[in-house]
Length: 158
Image (cartoon, rainbow, N blue to C red; front, side, top):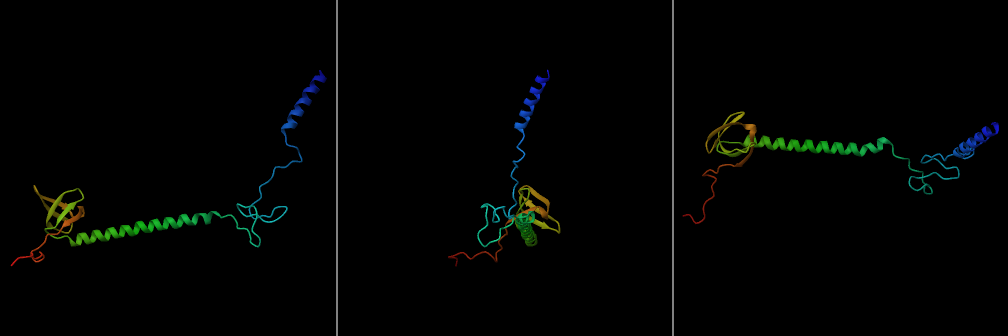
């Protein structure tokens, strides 16, 4: 029985020894970029070696990679801010130039002619009567009425 036990132990020892790496063989450790190899020159990313007479370029840090995104974010914020300012300025000019008898369109799609104006309200004449709206609801002025002083002279009139 001891002979059979010794045979099983030797088989298991042989099996386990095959799975383990030999004690003299070491796994190759990665070498950081820019650190000289055992036999020579420093390495450069992508090529393995640095060109003659030049120092290797270190790998970019997290802050260096973040700068382009920060610059793009600032540009986007500035663009949206400036566009909003232009729109507010155009809107203020529209509200300041609004007069009686101007034909306007509201944000709800109602087309009418301005009959009365106050600080924050306007009364529009529409086909079926009058509508009181807020001035802020006016989306655009379609056309201002042409007065007799502004009418062009007809050609051929005597």
